[in-house]
View 1 (tube, rainbow, N blue to C red):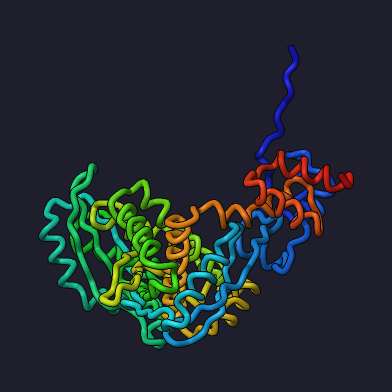
View 2 (cartoon, rainbow, N blue to C red):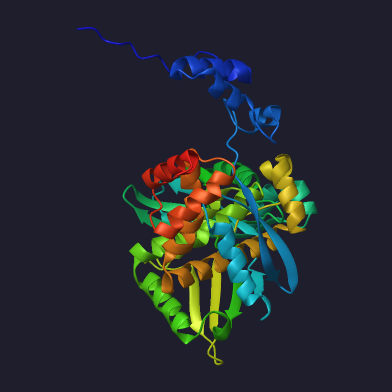
Length: 427
């Protein structure tokens, strides 16, 4: 009996190789052909050298379509919204929701602030309540040490703002958790607050006699809440039956975490698309949003929907939005820089508020589709083009095959392949 040896993933010095050499090594490991290698070498509008410095062990880029959501009026100003996503109907949904609210004033937004939280974990302390008070007594010392970590941030009006100390019970025993509250202004702030936490940790250990372990920001940025609200006139959205169906969908999501997960995923379709387009951290924003949705001990909707005195549909959203205009890919990625120019934003606060409005618009469209035609009609009409391309359609064939799939109500790869064959045979 013979056995085939598997290639080893232990490639010495892989990170030191130039990108073409890395691709060659991966091609040998995975059996890639010349076409695969040529595709990886084409990094599109992101220069290979820049990609190689943004992350480690680069072999290529993953291009995501960037679309523009139109019709958005936010705080009285018209905006075009760049959205980076691979999912059909997401951009169209925002355009449709915004169009239906445009004549009634569009979206109104606000922000709680631009403060982030850094956490310092203290363990092995015999008198945790006493330790808590000791730490609080050193608030001004902590302020001085924190602000010295980033004098430029302080010069821009940011820096240390407040101190919180919590005593929590865990499986590993009682812990004392210090929160550094820091205004990070137009930066997302992870690097700034992490640096401060690491600077303060040894002092906390010395003041209390305990042991400091984790020293890192919290992505539950509940001091950085973005808010948006909007009223859709019942006459503009299809009448009372549509309005009431949307309210029933919201009530379902508010009560049931199984529904809330999908409800909030739809919101994040819009939120994450703008976060990604502007070079911000999608994972941080998503983690913060879902944690905030469960802050009451029950996972629920990020949005609230009500009926106004005039009988119209009022929607609102509030969620953590830790995004920035400085640092990371926002200042380095050429597409992110262009997206920020399109948005015309001048502060992280302004960007966060726009993103919240997009999330509310996305939620409106998803609920309306669910309450009326069902989510599949609009979504699958757009998805049919993807299925047509998967079947091998090119050029004009894509739309022709997609139209047949939608007309038949069977958006499947086998049906697309059969229709493409029929089209090419002239039948």
